[in-house]
Length: 422
Image (tube, rainbow, N blue to C red; front, side):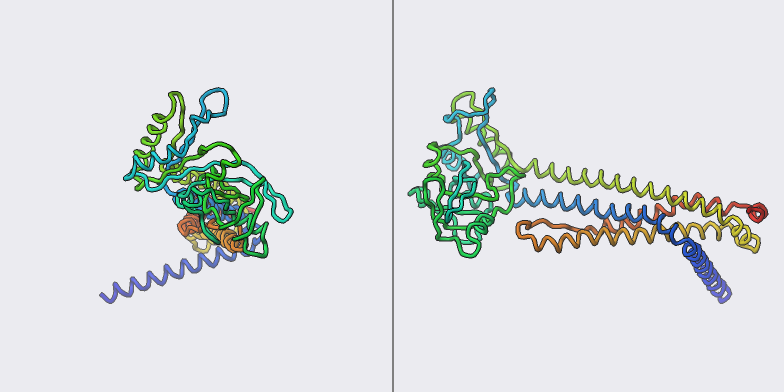
């Protein structure tokens, strides 16, 4: 038993000495050709850094789109009248109106929790002699809840404001900063066209419905009934409804479409959409984008692997006589093979670590910079630690895979032929 234990300890010590000596010889060879090793390492640095950045970009884009949809509400249904004829104009009698809004709320009480409508026109405002183009939006009472508008100052208008056609408004935070940089805009008067409006609130649109939104950077929101002073009409350009549960969205979408088509003249057409399908599509697109970008990064790594193999083949040719001397004094094929594999692993592993550091540093710096940009909020730049591990494993494996052929060629050299090599 003691002999077996001593034998195992002796083997372990011999293996440890073998690996330590092999690693030491590999490091000496790389230090002797620092510039060559650095240039060979450059491809691995780019490839491994690309893997981290590719996954980071894909995750950030996917998360941003999904958060936009979820923040608005995956159970949101929106509709508008369309015209299938040669003209883009829709007849006024075919447009969605306040009666349609009331019918939806009354007919679908268990399915629809909120419903709202909006219309908008381009206008210009005059504040203290300054004139700016703005988007004037007329909205109903529940528009703020449906679109999750964040009221920064003041308050949203009430049903009384709508019924009494109060000349009040809310302005975007960006517009408030431009028009009232050093004071609270709530309670101030602004001139929109020929009508003076009192600012009762400042708001921020947390998200845009995939870019399709009536809330622009410079927007003034007024009660829908007040918008009639400007347009002379009483219809919604966009109609919103929120289903009680996400699973009710398909039924609510169908019921609203049936209700709109039945309440208007034959031939009127309506586009009724929801975000549930778009949410799933966004997830699928995110996965597909990640896969495609990863394949591109892997191609870059494969190219760097070919570079490692070429340099290692040149190195074997240059060190043929050294290999012959080592074999002549008793070095085995295994020792020679592992020495060159260690060199390839050192190049790819060090390059992987450097690339990962660069790939992680860029998102971290972007995250810090985004904190100082006031208009860029809610954009996360996540770093996936799975991508870090993947980049290191794949990059290191690239060195071993592409370094095996030169290492095997070096191990198979005959001592007598190698010693005669000049």
